[in-house]
Length: 164
Length: 248
Image (cartoon, rainbow over all chains, first blue to last red; front, top):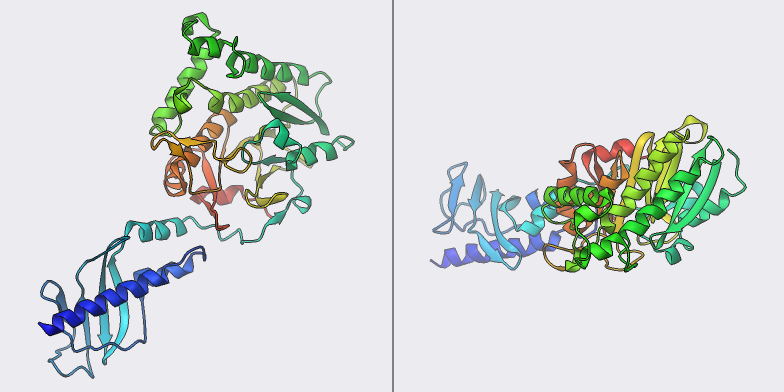
């Protein structure tokens, strides 16, 4: 049963690693690492599946012969403070080559979801109002006091002697 | 371009009118003050204040009061309670009335022979027809994190409304009526649609929902799109928003 413990530790380490990779405020592409990743980090590939996990060797892999062949191991669902995480790892030639996240916390799901709404047309730079040639401004509700500081106020003043 | 500003409802309304006869503004401006008089929560003798105190019934009020209440109830239902005519428990239709006033003023301008104009009230815009040189109107969305900068420029012609809800000017003034605490999660939510009253009410509800739910919700609303600005500067949009993004 000692091997079971080893696998459990490896799974938890992966979870921590993956949560560490979770992109915060860094645009969209990074989130792919949450779903699937290819990694060169070597982990012991001799550990069989945990009793409740399932191992699906794609090549006959006898215990103690990790050097060749590919196998996938599905880990237990692990409760984290963000919610349950479950990963499936693929080991090829004794190296961890792929991680698939089968379950991830709602927050990660939301990150993935929100990245689906990214606007590639807009980069992160501000648009200078003076060069945008705009006719009106929509902004968070302003009071009559706030109006005097608003872009709309500047537009209205610029238009006083304007053409048209 | 004829420009005019008018103070009403505790904020400032701006008009930009292309062409049109002199005097065309007067009915539109009068409508703003009429609605302010009926619906003000700051005037104890407004019909809405008296209705809230039980001194009037809806039937005793101007028919516009019943109409506004019906619109608010419809948006409340459609938004799952994220829009409410009783923020903080007190009858207050401002979430509907300001955008509605702008939309009605715009209708009156069109009726007065000015089909090409924008009317802006407190940061919410109703554009009609076309802008200078017959090009689409260009509406800047104020960047909630950077004064004097824009988060996006949207363009549209015909009936084109842009409303933004957020915390930039008034602080956390929008309360999530479902959770009962200040809404959070996005710096601002902008909604685009054909007419401002609904568009503005949708923006208020969407901001209260938080960005994830707001984007899903507005995506499912026919004829409306949303732009969300997150605290980290990311700008997100519903799938149809790209149509409204101006070039340059």
